[in-house]
Image (cartoon, rainbow, N blue to C red):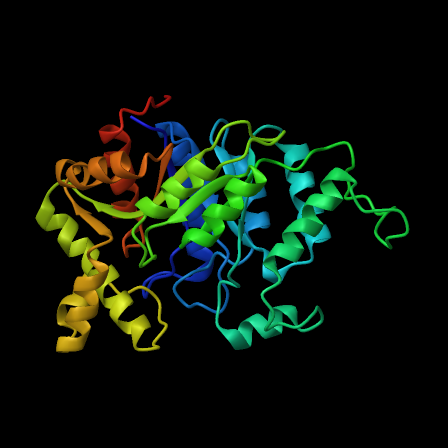
Length: 337
């Protein structure tokens, strides 16, 4: 099987605080390290009551210090929110502290609503501009020392200067980032867990259009998927009811901590809610280990993914741990004692 990795958003529930959610991420990261997962990436989201992961660079340092072999990275840093020099220096520091274990995933979206995006960027340029490409090019110029003579940044170095940036992945939910990643010779991660796009087209576009670069001679495409696994299909369905209610609420503009299965079972769903949930279930993968693999295997085959990265946003932390344990078994990972 292909390598298996984790995308963690540090879920906040109606029964846990944000601080506990962050501690749960450290606990899950140690488990993933022992189970043999390839990577552990943390997300960047802001002003979302169900997600505590707002500062990926801080969490990456904490997780890398608490683990020994898993690669740790950002899935990703939302580049519109940050000055490229700041991103370069923070990830050079991480790479210097944990050489060969850090990844830098970059996203185009702000990871939040427009007002919060403005608050994040209000002392930078126009917060309404789509300047991802310019920021990405600036990041690369800092890394390569490529600013021309006379440019004000010509003598600016991202410190520590003798530490390279970690491997770069562009994140996307459509074909734009796939084509850009292919053009610059970066890694690519497709967010099937929330994208309305068929993952096959962007994943294949990345592979067929890939241009080798000094940092990456061959393409590497990661497929992101939302998986809820349990010992039985019925148990998994109950756990996934949290996802269903959270999705229906968000589509109505209600952003709340993740509800428990009991809250989800007691909720009065409208026909519109049920239609939204049914739509989301097309990309949510739920069931026993065998049921989940029956859906994942053709998806991996059709997209020719080099790696699968799974996220599990459910209420109970122990059930979340067990879901990852089941997936580690299904993929034949090699755990350590």
